[in-house]
Image (cartoon, rainbow, N blue to C red; front, top):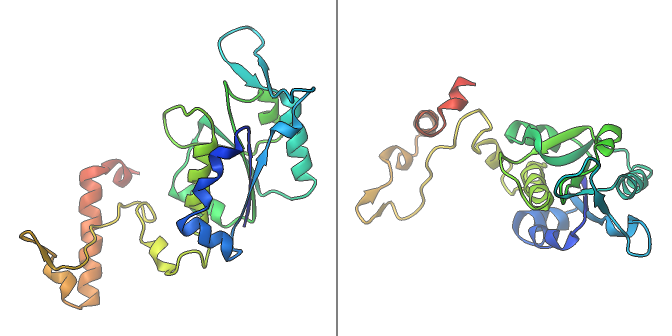
Length: 225
């Protein structure tokens, strides 16, 4: 999978992909992440990227021409399955969307900045708009890193045990059950006996029931859906 991320501040995206699972995915060649600086596509001697918004109001707007030139340049090289703009008014990103995106080959993520991007870019190029929650970030870079991580870890071969992702929270509209490791007793708190029984059928039943209980307590809205 190839993910291209257009950003005004590429430095914000250096660390997230240099460690842990994402680093291994890149080293294995299972995932390619290209951080595309928008500044070289800017206008004039100062490589301008933003301007005042028509109609007045606070906040600058990312201009059409630099983004259009950058997107067209990338589209001339790659046939994208989705061109995604990260914006607070987009569809809320969730595990189902991550699953769907992980089956694609080429994604473009556009990081907004300032007051956002000129609407005409959204009209001309964007095929999907995603939000990571009902709050506003300074830019789309952190959201891009989050989405890349959530999608990238689902690519076959990225996780050492591919079944691990299948038992994550939200994969079956339930939260994951509690997990334990050694020692079997710590400060008077014991691991449930069933997990020490070696009976796979009973353990699976316990996990399913525990997942349902914890979802009912913490996220009953998932059960309603």
